[in-house]
Every structure is written in C-alpha cells, then in structure tokens.
Length: 636
Image (cartoon, rainbow, N blue to C red; front, top):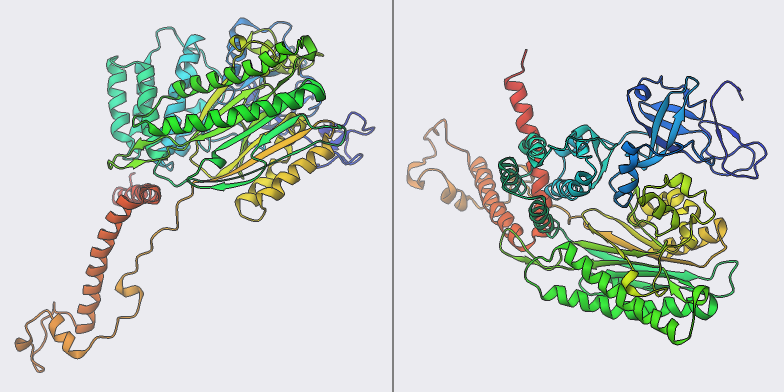
C-alpha cells in the first residue's frame, strides 16, 4: 500500500492494522466492514478545497465540493470549546432533525482555519449531494409537490424563532430525497423577513406546479404577498390538499412481527404487535404496529411492556373508529394531542401499579414505546367522492426504541431518541457527538410508567405514505451500533420486489442483531407499504391490429357515399376512402369514443389509479410542448 495515499481506518477497536485503502469494503486485517461517514463542510473555503486531497490535518478526504469523508469515523471529531452563539440554533432545532442537519464538529487545518462540519446533511450513501428541489420539481407528481410545500410551511415557525428563515428562501439550500425535504445548512435571516419573501420563491416554482396544485398555490402566493394569511392557515390548506392527493392512490399494508430473547438474556422483557402475520387492506390489524422494551428486570420489565401493549391496542382501535366517523379533516396537531393523552393514561396505569407495589427508584417498572398507526381518515376528493383513507401515518416514540422508513434508495430514521445526549443538544449545551462521549449519554430521560403522566412528553410525528417502502419498528437490541443504517439495503429491495417474504426479512434482522449485538432482547415489526398504481390501461387503434372481417354487404353500408351513386365504373373522388381505409378510420373513431368514455369512467370509479397516471401524462405533455417550442424557436 502506498503510504502517501489517504487511508481510512477500521472501526474495530481490537484491529491491530486498521489502515485501509479508500476503496476497501472490509478491513484487510480483521474483516470488519469499512464505515463511510460523509459530512458537509460549510463555507467558501471548504468549497475551494481541491478534490482528492485531505483536510483537517488529514482527518478528512475531500471527495466532492463541500463533501468530506471522515477517515477516522470511530474517533470523536474536534469540537468548539464552547458552541458559538450563532450556531446554537443547530442545537435548539435538533427535534427537527428529519429535515435539518446537525453539528458534527469542526476541522482545523495547519494554519488554524476552522471549518464547520455538519452531520445528517443531504448527502447520498455514496457521498454525492442530493438534488436541489428545483431539479426535481418539474417531474414530481402533485402529491409530492404539495408534500414539499407542506414541509416548508411547517418549518417556517421553528426557523423563524431562531432567525434562520434564510434556509427557506434559497432554493439551492432545499434538497430533496424522494418526498423528504432536507436543508443543506441553516442560513440566518433579517428580522424583517416575512411570508411575502417566501411567496417570491414559490412564484418561481408556480409555472411547473401540477394542475391539482396550481390554483391553491397561486391563491396562497397572492395572500402571502398581500399579508392577509398566517402560516397556520397555509399549513392547514396544504395539509388538506396533501391528503386529497394522497387519498387518490391505493394503499396496501402487510405486517409481520417477532421478538427474541437474544443470546445473553434469560428472559424477554420486550413485547411487540403484531406477532406473526397481519395482511389486510381495509381492516384494522395491520394498521397498528407497536414495540415495547421493558425496564425493571424480570419482575417488572416484562409486566410493563405487556401491560402497555394490552392497553394501547383497544385505545388505538377506538381512535381509528372515532376518526372514521368524522366528515371533516382533523388536523394533525389534534390527533397528536389525542395520542399523547392515550399514552399518558397508559403511563398512569403502569405508574399506579408501581405505587401499589411500593416500587421506588430503580425498582420501578416501565417500558419504552414506539407505535406506528396508519390512520384511515376520510377526505372529500375534488370530484365530490369521499375516500376512506388519506394515507396518514402517525408515529409515537417514548424512549430509545426506533422507527425507520426504508426504500431501495434510502434509510430514514423517523424518531428521535429520548436519551441524555439528545437532551443536552436540545438544551443547547453540547453537540451530539460530544454528548455521546458522556458515560450517561445513552441513558433514557423518559419511559412509560416511571413517573406521573403529567411529566411525560410523548413525541408524535405525522407522515404521509406516498411511495412504496418498508416501515420498521425495533427495540435497541437491533438499532444499537447503527445496524439498521448499515444493513437496511440487504432486506429492503428483496422484500419490495417480492423476492423475500416479510417473515424471512424479520427473522433475518433478528439473526443479524444476535450476531452483531446479541446482548439484549430484540423485537422487530416490519410493514410493507404499497401505493403503486395498478397497471395502466392500454388502448389500441385499428392500425395496431388486423382489420376485423366484414361482409361485402356491410361495406356498402359503411361507404362514404350512398350505395346507388357508387358505381363499379365510377372513379372515386380523390378524398374518398377505400372500404378498408373507411373501416379503419371508423374503428379509430369508435375506439377514441370508447377510450374517452372509458377514461371518464376510470376517473370516476377508480381515482386511485387514474390520478397518478394523469399526472404522468400531463408531465409528458409539458415536455413535448417544450420540445416543440424549442424546435419552432431554436433561439440564437
């Protein structure tokens, strides 16, 4: 190996020869998989770094403009002695990490120049920058366009609180990964910035907005520029339109869950729902997934996790039934409050059981909780029909069990852990990488049943299912050591392609956890989500197939001229059609009529498959129009 070439270190602390080539997949000495941790280097100085060189005293490899690879991923990065005041918003906004980056550390070169490094940045798994929103806007369907605008609107209030609205006023800083909006970095804004500035950005995007979105978007822009609308109303209108669009696609759910004691434990304090298979389309069982990780040992942890499971199921079913009776769309904030109230009720039942048994301090039993509920909310469609499912997914988390959304392209963590490290970040005291070096960094800050529900702060997140994917709920027996982030691709695509049953994937995850972690109980619930449209209708004209056989007597009736004037010796007018061509055109017009009627019926009877197909046709027509205009007006 050329010692002058940059080398990446193995993360195995017991490896005696950790240096490896940059392109190595596993360590040459111990066989441990090489971890590649990419960070975003902020600023013009970082952008000027020559590709293929190192930075930060050879700690980082410059692989793309502003994208650096950490060559020592197991070593804590250098940190500020004290986080500068202008960077504190990165810490305070940690709960929004699904959309925002976070501080990783700093790089200091030989001349003492500092470069801020961001983690959880919009960078692909292979170290490439994710595309800016404008690059994907034209080709996105109506649902996705609305979803991006909705996420921008929901970020407005928290960013405004810390004067960081500049991030929403620069299209290049807004990156997209499928439906997920991700900000590249936080950009300060002047206190005078208001919604009219955001309207100016949206107006640039308006010409390429899909027809289902354009009128609403145009109206919002006018009101934003006139100062006659508040951000809360913008969020409400976009949410309603988002649910309308999402509800027009089909939704199929299939779930499988399992729990395992693990290699090192004698009993299982975990509990999950469902156990085994749940395969439904319109019923309730596969809409609800739960994982609980008990706390308090054999006498308490098992009891608490099972008790939580037993209490939550009927409460969530009652919530589904209650929402199903409503004719108006219920705001996500109201549903979140209802779910939090349910969690507090369950918490108090477990807490009272602790009090009745005189359990105190570490003897108190409790449990972590992650819960995913696909809530089939009714929504009125633009056609006037009512859809029974708006594709909403509500996720609730308490503790350090996790929920992930997996697609063949990416792994998204949907929850934020309730641990000491996260608390220190949210309080503005420490960067997460630094906080995790604390001996108690991974200790829980809350769990069900440990104290009165008045002090419980359940985290509830709302997402909308608009693409095929896998929903993974797991206890820390699987998520520890970032196993999901490292191995998600091994299971995701095979399951979505139908090459691996859910049961096999769940058992594979459990086996992997036993091999790589193995010191804890393991629970996994995996739900396959399908929103793909049905196969598109194919229409064939008469020219695509042989002409049907017709009697000669029929030809006279179909002739363009009356039979008595069409003599055998009379020359046909130049514009007249031969019998075969007349028949072909008749079939063509007949099929056009049938197609028009069929398309109308399709749009009314099955909007779930019609509307996505319509969006694709409209996009293609826009492309054709642009190509024709370029041919007519080629320019200079």
